[in-house]
Image 1 (cartoon, rainbow, N blue to C red):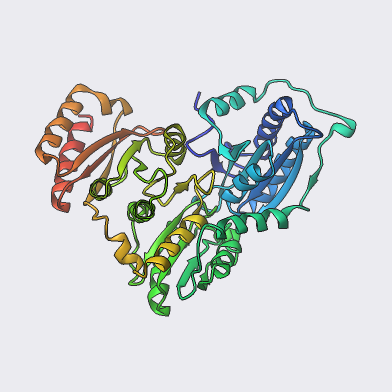
Image 2 (cartoon, rainbow, N blue to C red; image 1 turned 30 degrees about the horizontal axis):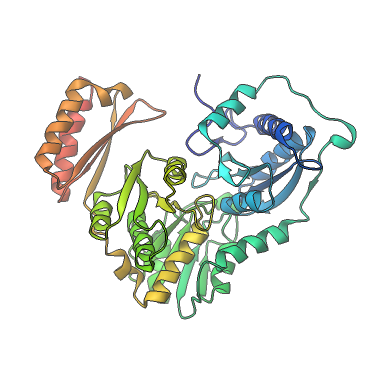
Length: 444
């Protein structure tokens, strides 16, 4: 049986076969009942719930709230807010759980359920497995005065606390002009507000919070219109968020879209130069470019690699006590300031680095010289990634690159695919190596 939880919660077509109001209610009942059983404080335990702007979020929120209250949890409804605000509120107000209803960068028809445990951390594999086992099992609903209550009274306080903590991490951004693309999602209200409060001049686009158009030709997955707007208005940089604002993509003043690895390198070097604790290590996934590793090595920063997924980055950060980590996609985790990836925090830290250094974001990002990278998806049994003939071919190609590039094979977690990734000094060489390996991986 396929696992219900993916690398970032549960996601699927809203009201389709995999993500229904019934599932949202059942998951809330099981999670809420477990949390209530573990609750030792006074009164009923509290859960915070937020969502992005998708129309289906209202339906799923209603179902989840019914589930939580039916097992004796009070619910603080935050409405449309960034996912990292849900994590922040879970931690700040000592909630037993946080639930973000979002499909992040997926198109509008999809939605998802992301749970946060006490402290604002994403659930572990073991916690998710326990929830899956609990679905469909009998549990006790409460009655009378034990039934939970739902309210939105605390939203303003939760939002202001989140913004206050964000702004406390940076100095004045006066003199910077930034264009913000809110992806018609959860960042539409708070991202422009946060950057203005920090002192920047803000031009906002795709910030109407039209949930029907969330991520549609805009935001982090489609930064083309942002890049054009940055050049047209003469801004210093652009920031594109995804639908739930847990990541950001940066555009420099010339309209060039920066790679997430360049942003990670920029932030890592800022920490290193400031002499901050833990600044000698950066956590990144196996997909991060070799150019990032080379730049960090020159700066005296070790790069610790993890599996793909921000949860695995976070696990390595927590296990090793490393404050900074992230992904090529624009997810950045800064444990000095947040419990999870936060696109608004990332953007503020990038702008703060620009303002303090007096250098352009392009100049700061160019400390990382990216190697050409080719990714080929080969239709083949996932086990082909570990077959002897394939491994032998990888060894041959890696030896041929002689340290100037690298090869990575990853079986898909959900499809009969093997992903072949190659980095090399030139695009031509990377393409040739990837083609040769793909021909070996492909079944006859």
